[in-house]
Amino acid sequence: MTASSNKYSANDPAFDAEHGVLKNMLGLTSEAALLHAESEALIAAYEEAALGYSELHTFTADDVCRLHKLFLGGIFEWAGMYRTIDISSPGIRWCHAQYIDQEMARFDTLLRAATPLSPNLPHDEIITKVAEIHGEFIAIHPFRDGNGRTGRMLANLMLMQAECPPFRMELFDTAEMQEKYFAAIRDVWANVDYTKLTRLFAELVPKP
Image 1 (cartoon, rainbow, N blue to C red):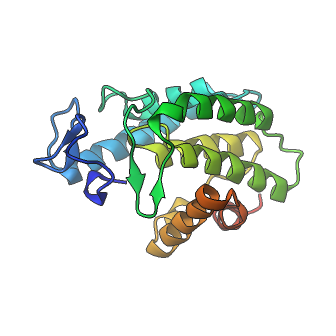
Image 2: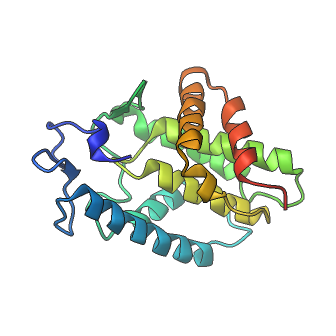
């Protein structure tokens, strides 16, 4: 999600209100240029993460911070660090900054229990576990930006452990799928209901 979505305010010291982007180490002031740099960084992060984490790895909240830093560390100084300001998206106010530490500690417990994700589990159970972990992480939204992409990278690493194919991102990038995704996330945030998200992930991850 970009700065133009009104997720950030002029009161955010990391936000360049004049250009409508987050201040970055590359000095980029164009939203398109910043998105391009982030896309390139995400590809590199996926490659490094796929090599760095084994099928037997137990993921932790610290790993999530490492993934975020791996992704955005060359662009933003605060990559890998929890945000200290409150942010929101249309219809959702993410976890208050003051509660992120305790919520991520709770998430750490859930993540440790869910990983490594065994390939011996039924496919439906694998998808359910990945959806629940992803939904919990997104509901916290611990970073200033890049939460969705970091969360999907974690989900794909979990799928890799379970010997499942990664998300079919060509489907995820459609407007219809984006709308379904945000509706599913709102259900997790408002009702702790993972039904829509699990159903959506089942569309994105075909059975091997």
